[in-house]
Length: 184
Image (cartoon, rainbow, N blue to C red):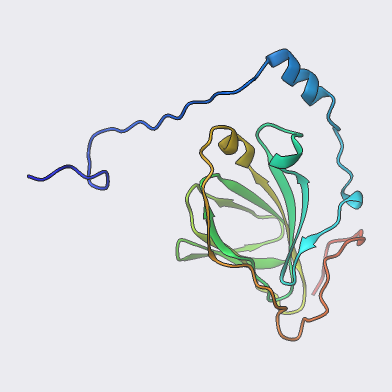
């Protein structure tokens, strides 16, 4: 019998990486307590586009939190984002609109008020099913914790569209809108 492969092994495996660094609890608590506790969404602008727009409230680079990445996604009518996968989980609270996900080849439909869970290592893509209305989702991820543990791996399978959906060339993210409830 040949060597045992990690793909077929029945032996329990443990993956451990060293977590090292200059970390003093008192200093870190003081740093965290000095950070803003309220992030004003109106002061943040959407980026990306033209089919999917993002407004980042808390992300790893800003150091506001140790475990959360929070952003708002807006999908143009008939729009979609990149097909991708990552180690960290994500939860999408659907604020408005209707659409669907493709997770590892399986379709999951959603609408306003639903929560979509993207599991670890799932190749996925988000789609707006409406041809006339945008859709929005508040996204919460554990990405900073995975980065801290040196376990963050991401892969883009299909890039984010760089051209608008035909017929929706002038779609912009709803920067200043106060009522996000759309009625058909």
